[in-house]
Image (cartoon, rainbow, N blue to C red; front, top):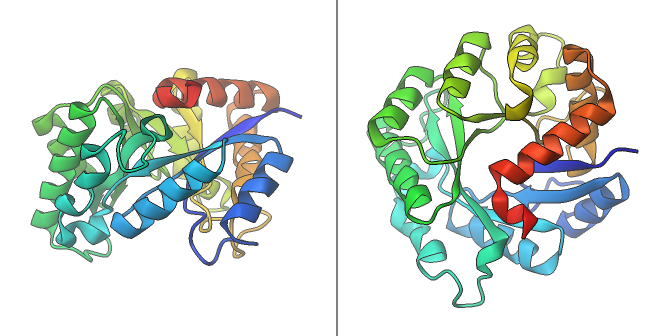
Length: 262
């Protein structure tokens, strides 16, 4: 069986089947060699880092989700300001984010979201870390902030839900597109067209577990072991072999997140 990398999950969440440690063990049993656990605020960043310290095949990010932007980026900067100290293994932090803009829920004021996004772009540049972006109902503003601040060297649009036009705009800026279980959903034709367009060297897989379980598990809790189902859907959409999609996305993950190779 081919090997996979889940570039984005939240297995510390209590809804994760079996809990965080069991889900990581199950991922390994299903040929998922590496897992990136995502920080969305100070608490979840702490949890993600603890998992990364505990498991050889797990890495973490430091981030403030747009929902939490109202709490301020200074709540997460200590995690990167003290790299190499306080028990934080620098090699285990692969990115800043997820961060960005979410104008669907507006849990934080839009001005606060833009400010937090811009500040995390700066953090990614300062520490030479990948930037992981969440954008929902906010593509024009997302591109506006990125263009205004300047793209970091490595940018990933996580759980890509745009259409082909937005995929083109993202790739033109040098970003990777990470596809989740949504690509398997019956009504996700726009996303599948974006996945078909995406240049091979910019394609990534993720689960966003415990949410967005791919078909045939849709409606149930998700886990990193299911990333293979995302890859199989991408293979079908792109008329490529599953083994080729696995190889390509694993290679891309190491380029998008260089610390995975250390």
